[in-house]
Amino acid sequence: MIVQDWLIVLGILILTMSVGILPAIGAGLGLAMLTFVIGFIRLPVIRSVSSAAIRHSILDRPAAENDLLRRVGDQIRILHLQGPLFFGSVEQLIAHLRRLPEAIAGISGPPRALILDFTEVSTFDSSACAAMQKLGNTMQDRGVAVHLAGMPAQLETMFHRWGLDLAGGMFQVWPSFDVALEVCETRLLAAQPDRPAPPVRPGRGGGGGPPRAPPALGAGAGRLPPPGGAPPRGAAGGGGASSGGGGAGCS
Image 1: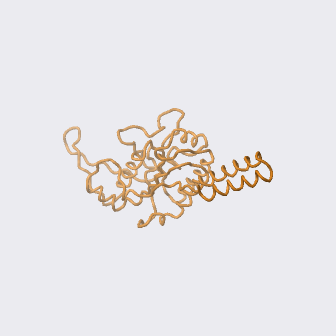
Image 2: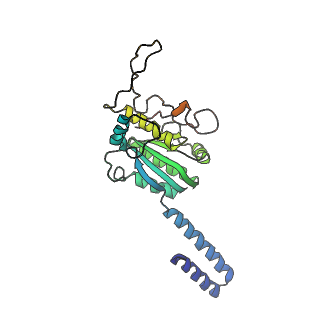
Image 3: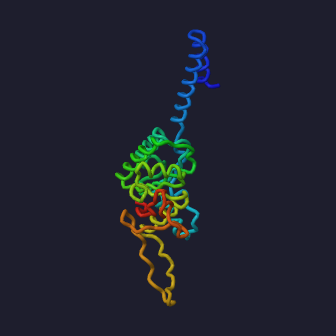
């Protein structure tokens, strides 16, 4: 047993001898619950931190594009979350993000996109919605597009009911981390002036048509569907929250 547990046991014994067993049991339960809550608050909500310069999506890209991502991919920051999501843990996340770019050793320059991976988030409560609204406002002020990936359906529904902008303004929602990363990579590559020219595909009549202009970054950019042509999570009608479909791109 740790020191805190021994102190709780000692306190219960003292209360039992002084005021009786029932008040001692009540005090013991209260202390145990308080210790549990404090332990939850101290649990780091960020499991790991990286960038697109280190971790790439599973999309098979040309070697030249992979080299370019290794050079400029630090403009896409990746945070893998874990454990319970509530007001206190999201405040930890906000405090971490306010220190960008110093938050990631060896990476310089401000980020253009932030991917939050919710795959390992176990529990959550409604108080996290207010904190996420604060996080979204903070990142919007910095011109950083926030992508939410792998969220449980219940959490997405809670955010939607709270009124969080999940339609491509403040946040963009993707069904998985890899889809979010692939979209951000594609947008970032398209914005690079030294991007390797894509191969020219023949037109329908057999002639070589001019290559398409790369999609622009920014809030007014055209929507980029996820791989396979499937709409972003919640884009079709229904009760779920809608995704921004990559509308804000990676800036």
